[in-house]
Length: 415
Ligand SMILES: Cc1cc2nc3c(=O)[nH]c(=O)nc-3n(C[C@H](O)[C@H](O)[C@H](O)COP(=O)(O)OP(=O)(O)OC[C@H]3O[C@@H](n4cnc5c(N)ncnc54)[C@H](O)[C@@H]3O)c2cc1C
Image 1 (cartoon, protein in one colour):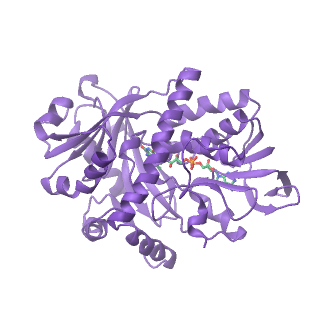
Image 2 (cartoon, helix red, strand yellow; image 1 turned 180 degrees about the horizontal axis):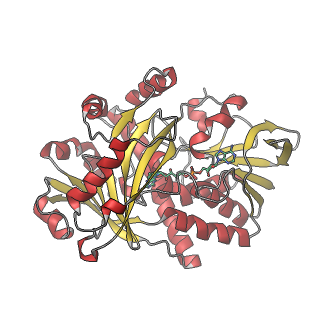
Image 3 (cartoon, rainbow, N blue to C red; image 1 turned 120 degrees about the vertical axis):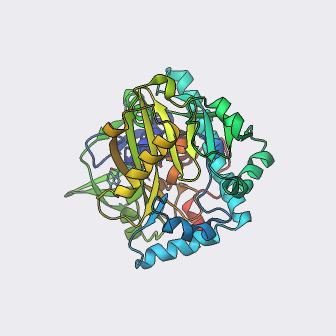
């Protein structure tokens, strides 16, 4: 088949690679002038499949109000008058039920764990190097936060996932560079989890895909998709381009293409912030990728730089960056690793991810024939990209998938 992939973020690039590997003629259409220019560009780098979890978790609705009141809140709400935002929030609150949390987390974990295997396959097959590191450490500043994480710890135990819940002194042994005066109650260590440079990986997969014949068209903004006798027609400026099938890997802006097709899915773009600083003292950097659970901010090493990322903003429509969010990133980095970097010369960036209320991505077929989705990976798109790309390619090819895909398609929202 001739298959079009719209969007050349890490998810679109991986989808194109596996479609080509399955023998299809593949064209990628991207409105930017290069791959990985949007959410995949300044990604925090965390690939911890075992830590992938929905935002909608027990206790979250209660903590939401107090979170929003904090000056250094890891969450901001914009456009609070927007009915679409409230409708999304209502659905999100329903997903915070313990049983829904377990169900959603299992689905997300299934995709992310599979993705880890697929990345391993790609790494071994093509000798990829994307500044990967091993080990992921969640740090908790207070006893209360440790108590609140109980549902998450229980999930790891029940699922037989290797993890260590650490007392404060064990955290410090594991991460000797942690600031000794920073407040710390304990931690969770996932020794097998990885981190890596997302755009660097995407660039290598793009080259491999091109070598298999995938065509990349940049500056190609797809305005609409229509069904046709052959498959699909895509409207790009005044041109109508046809293909047998199309996969949308369009990230945060997917609703603009889906709504005219009658697919009104509860998607919400969420903005995240990132800061990148050059290392000045290699003895003072983290050995593991670290997640500060109080500020939901991660710190990960990428070569000779540190990437600090976090703070979610719902309902943001303009490109203006929120200064409070950037300050929080620097505060967290200073709190834990004050001597690691030249933080005053850090560069800042923000990008949008697409999130469903249940946190589970949309991968697979839709109610429209020949239109497939690979969107809605939220905060875990890098951790899921390789696996999601392979799953989408197998579904388009009508092949058996390596893992169960029930619960992943958009049909769960279209009764
Ligand atoms: C600051 C930050 C930190 C993050 N940290 C992590 C992390 O540590 N671990 C993790 O797993 N995930 C993380 N994420 C999430 C992850 O980066 C995303 O889920 C992932 O990059 C999504 O990839 P994508 O290819 O779907 O989207 P994108 O990279 O946004 O790509 C979508 C592409 O589609 C193109 N496009 C959209 N509409 C059209 C159209 N109509 N026509 C043509 N092209 C179109 C866009 O231009 C874009 O290039 C983070 C996100 C951010 C913003």
